[in-house]
Image 1 (cartoon, one colour):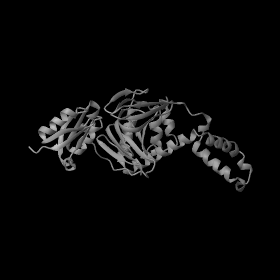
Image 2 (cartoon, one colour):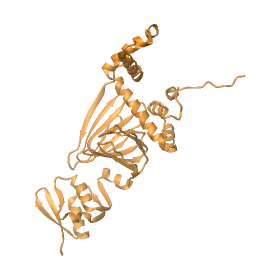
Image 3 (cartoon, helix red, strand yellow):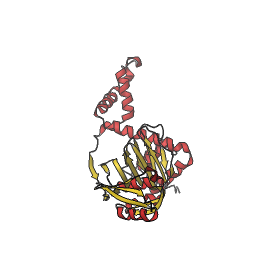
Image 4 (cartoon, helix red, strand yellow):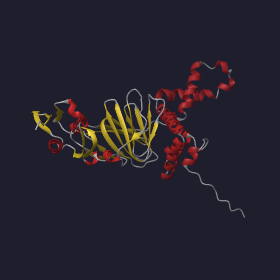
Amino acid sequence: MNTTQPTSTNATDHALAGADEGSAEAWVARLDSPECTARDRAEFERWLDARPDNVTAYVEAERAHQAAAQLAGDEMLQAAARIAWRQSGRESARSRWWVPTTMVASLLVATVVGVGWLRSPAPVDSVRYVTQVGEQRSLRLADGTQVMLDTDSVILARFGDERREVEVDRGRVQFQVAADPARPFSVKAGTGTIRDIGTTFQVSKNGSEVNVGLIEGAVVISNGLAQAGSALRPGQQLSYDHSGRMTPPEPLDLSVAQSWPGGDLVFKNRRLDVLLAEMNRYSATKLRLADPNLGKITVSGVFHIGDQAALLEALEQGWSLKAERAADDEIVLHRNPG
């Protein structure tokens, strides 16, 4: 009696068909599949750790995947693909040298776009979220992703049937991403893109400077101007700027990173000028130093966001400083001679 059981297939199996299961291209397909599981994501993290080259290979494969997805929605390229599709069946009846240059270009476009022209791009809903100076806002996006916006922050959420994308225009944001394997979640900030692998992470954008810190899970960061990307593990961070230069991953103090969403700022032997700059982000009244050399003083403590009175009291008692109001919107700190 034949006891062989039929082999079942799913969307992930089809996505991996024709590709080496350990290849970067296969992992892009698996992570984008609706059948992607938590076990798949754990295996992906182990694959990233196996070889340093795997991170670069995955970032390059993901970048190619995203580029193909964008090309598939371009009307002119769709038209070129249709022409190439119709003409490709006639090519065998003609001399290969007869094919004009424009046809060669169309065939190349068809290779990249594939059958993306068969369907129109899905509609995308865009929603803008803003916080004012001194304001923090917790919100839940349409997909269930929990977002915490820090003071003076702006994000734009673009959700469609096939993708979830958030752009950080400025400020600092924490994302707790809701699971939805059918719709990849990515964050754009400056020249870089952060691809979520089921995580909690923070993105800070100040001008052209961007910092990404990972609380839990995994993220892969690619930069359109860089030659390679990078993956983060929990407790790591990296930064990049408009030039495409990306720093290597470095330690992230989780206690510090997790404090600001709860309304506190934790400082461990940090310079006073750095502390004041951070506190000033939450208030229209700015704290200044009469002598820039005072900025070298190191300070440790937990300070509640926006509570300048408590901070000034601590600085006066613990660090021998004196606060004087110079204007309605400015308080200057001096060294207390007594």
